[in-house]
Image 1: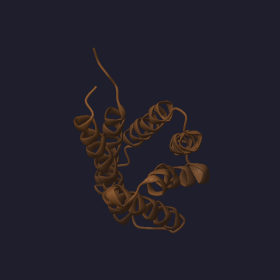
Image 2 (image 1 turned 135 degrees about the horizontal axis):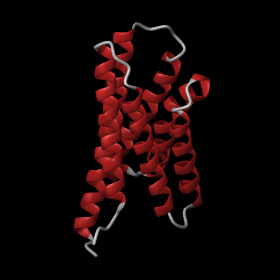
Image 3 (image 1 turned 120 degrees about the horizontal axis):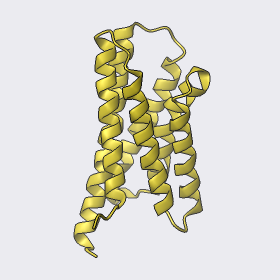
Amino acid sequence: MLKFTDKTYYALGIVASTANIIGGAAFILGSYLSLIFSIASILGGAMMLFLTSGAKGDRKKQLMLFFSSIMLLCSMLGGIIGTVGGALAWPLFALWYFLDTKGEESNVHTMAFVTMLCGVIQLALSFFPLEQRVMGCLAIAFAAVQGVFAWVLFQREKQRQSENPE
């Protein structure tokens, strides 16, 4: 029987980031693959929504995860709503982990901070006209940071499961 855990959901985030990297690479080469970016948004939003359902009893975390998933799904709308939603979804997701982690989880804390920083930079740069190749490179860089953050969370959950097998 399949058992879905937080580790499974973080894997969705890794796949979503990979899809964004593929979309960014295609953008550098001159093609905008909106389907790839939409799939990435859906997978990232699903990850955040599934994590929301697993955060039983922690209202602040549930609200943060739910709001970030809605922001990510808004990124598919385009325009200013899509721009803001796409830029702030992962930073809002990372904010909880940034505030919740302690010194013993410094890699999670660091990657959450870097993810939030990338979101702010993405939002600021989205209002400037940039060359297509630059935009593609930035998309790849931001997606790579998100993917590493999801990977760090995946590894943390994997370690927790090995320490506390059920």
